[in-house]
Each structure stands twice: as structure tokens, then as C-alpha cells.
Image (cartoon, one colour):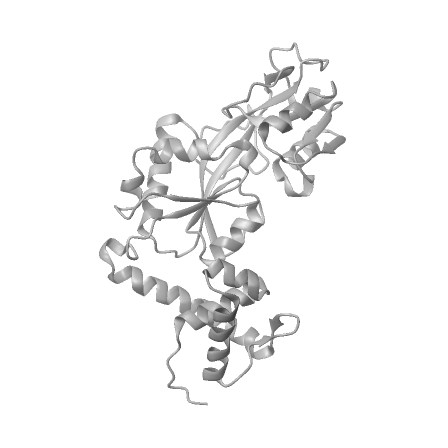
Length: 322
């Protein structure tokens, strides 16, 4: 095989995306290509390399494909960095900073709006507005970051975090209990978390995908848990009111819809804190990322978002430092 060959990065990107999705249709959709065009790019790459990289029946990597994939990812990262290095201010032709968010029931956009409101052009260096996307959960945004579909993501980080990713703590937000007005504890001005141990924790999905609620239940002895379908905050809170034993948890600043029969009670001794973080792929070169992290740090300092006292507060994973 001729070792002095020139790789077409569009073909390499096509291969990497199929290798990650293991599905030609999904991979084509993420690249904005037809499935036929994507298949042709991969076939041309295989022809250039003189080897088969993908099995076409049930899509999977050949042995050559497995060997080629890590180097192909490195080549794409180097190509992206080279483009960023020679465009004005590293702006990659004016592309907006793409930020995915997750944990939608807890309204992550309100925190990003406080950080970026009025300074989006500063964050992107004049490259345009922030482009906000929606992830289902941490695994889905991790995949988007590793593929390069997002430059950063914002939500709650919990271990294990992929080794190729970095994160910065942005906000520690007190958590309140939400419960039916008929709940036995509804009239209390404040509650200790362990007072909820005899109640029924209502979760908007499987608890193994809701790490904070799972950790809370384990820590404070909540044994009865039931799950519903996440159809939005108003629907979720209405479900909480249907049973006087039900309760759930929400960050204190989440704007609540008008739901009859709902009570919101602060939690104290200790106060649970929900940790919001910014996540990105280590070494990612979009200049807006540095500006966004700086804006997060500045806002957190002004609003005292990172105050934490282990004698007063509870976090599933206490920070090593502010």
C-alpha cells in the first residue's frame, strides 16, 4: 500500500461518524448527508486505504476499522485545530458556539441565560449567537461532545465522566421539596430531608437515569419510589398532587407553573444542593469556550453560586474546592 497518500477529511469524518453510530442512516442525519452520499464517502476511503473498514450487514467495525478509528479521531481533531488556528480569532468561519443542555425538567436554560444574557456576542467573539441544543441525559451529551456535534454542554455531571471530557462547576443550587397540599408535612415551613423518608418519591423517569434523585433516596432512607413519564414540568407537578404521599425535588429557582394543590417547602439540616456544570471535550479549540467559562466564573462570583458548607449542605459528590 502507498504510504504517501492524502486522506480526504470528509471521508474520514464519514467513517468516524458511522463507527460511532453503528448505523448509516443515523450517521448520515448527523452530517446532513443522504445515506447514499455517506456510503460513497466511506467506500472511497476504503478504496484509498485498500482495506475494508466496516461490515455492511449488521454495521460493525472490521479489525482494520478498529485499528484505524483512534488515529482517524486524532486526525479530525488536528484538522479542526488547524482550521481554527488560521481563521480570524480562531472563529472557524464565524460558526456559533454550540452548547447542549440536559436536565430539562430543572430548567437549565435559566442559568445559562443569566450567564450569557447580553454577552453572547462577547462569548462567541463576534462569531454569532450561542446555538443551544437539547440532550436527553449525560450519556447522550457525552456522545455529542465526543462526535464534535456540540462544543460544550451544561447540566449535572456525575461520575464516571468520560476521560476525554473536562468540566467546571458553575452553580450549587438549593433544592426544595414539592408535595401535595394534602401531604402530612405540607404545612411545615421547612423540612429536614430525612422527614421525607416515609413518603413516596415521584420521579420523572427511571431512577437509574436520574442520579441526583437516586443518591438522595439512598442517603436519606427513601424506600418507596414511583416513576412517571416526563411530559413537562406542569404535568409532572400535577402528578405529584394526585397522591398525598407523593413528593419530589426541584432546584429552588425553577419557575413553577400554576398547579392547584401544590406546596413547595425548603429543605434544611442539611440543604441538598444541585450542582450545575459546564462540560467540554479536553483540548477543544472554539474560542467561545474560554469566554463562556470565564463568564460562568464571573457570574458565579457575583451571585455567590458556589458557596458550600459541609456542616449545613449536602452534595452527592462534594467539590474539592470552589
